[in-house]
Length: 341
Image (cartoon, rainbow, N blue to C red; front, side, top):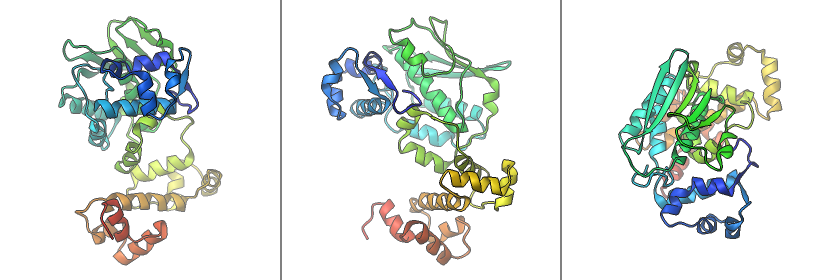
């Protein structure tokens, strides 16, 4: 679980992470085999697996347990799709504080085994993790929640966030260094509480994502959370996020966009070309994604979608959509909705 796709994880840590599956009778060799991996590697004490292989194992456990907590809480579970619903609930929040508070309130509706509480003391924010009641819960669930929370917050605001410190109220496990290596901050075991401490300034960060970028994220959210961001956000992605969050479907002309980015049109064109794209191509991609998003909603007519997309006539939308995708809006809608021609 690293920002690098080639990073490996020790089998000791994998066994600990999948302890909930083991409690339910799933052996590691069996999970390896059902994930398309060599089951013999599960018996090699010094074996390490890639982050991609770990994702496949976790997806298999989620599928078999029906639990997004991968069985780490013996008496409770979070049904598949719960994280997706939470993400939809927070995506339109104004800032990270609203998103954290709304996500906490969302999970309260389902009586998950853990309680999440956000507090702010002077210049420090704290996310406290505790148990709702006494039940069999592996300590690893607190590590998993801390990891997912920080990575999801980072995605929401479009930048990699590093907490001040992460504290756990249990003794360091044999694989503690594996978890600590995921963060650029101290990870302390044997503390009084399970808590993520971070700068209070994080809470005012505006969300950089939109419902459209969320739909892309959720197609492979586990992989994106585990992989994280391996490099700083490129200019093309900055432009995409700026257009998505600030302008809706009414895109600015190039000089206006450049002014908001504090660079000249020549500089913007050059950097986008170096990244293999252009301002026009980014706009067309965003329009295509928005069109597909709306076409997947049967309640909207194609004429209504054309107006929402900023086209004065439906015929102009048809031409543009066919240019972007090679198919008509009606044909695309049938495909998205699983309808026959």
